[in-house]
Length: 167
Image (cartoon, rainbow, N blue to C red):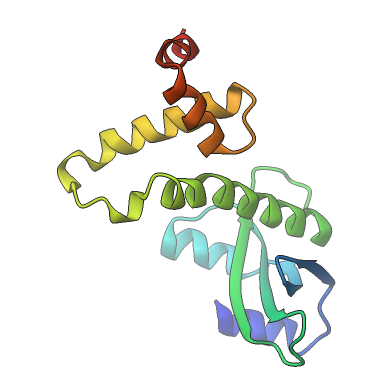
């Protein structure tokens, strides 16, 4: 698929370029999107992915604020499919991709850092523990805590409050 995209898009300029500064670094994302065309039938037959409408590529570059050169460059190939008959615009696809990563970072980063989920070696009970952690995460967020450790401390300080959150 990457070869097909390279042939289709060539070395054209990206359709969308986003630059963000924060956390002591600069990140630039470049997006290329195109209609899937003949690739749609191939992906449906070969991989069982019907309805692929748009294919794209994103290149992410990161560097420290003081650095002159990019320290990390990553490229990904993306596909988008839907039952809509109308093709999404390049800006819509880019916004959907950014929203996906916001969800990934908001959920999985918290599970990895706050709950040390990657260090759990209890493989037999990993799924039930994950369900409990995700439930606790959602309850703490619904109670209005912006930071999960603050919610954990509030529940630990008054155990009856933590039990009340469940009801």
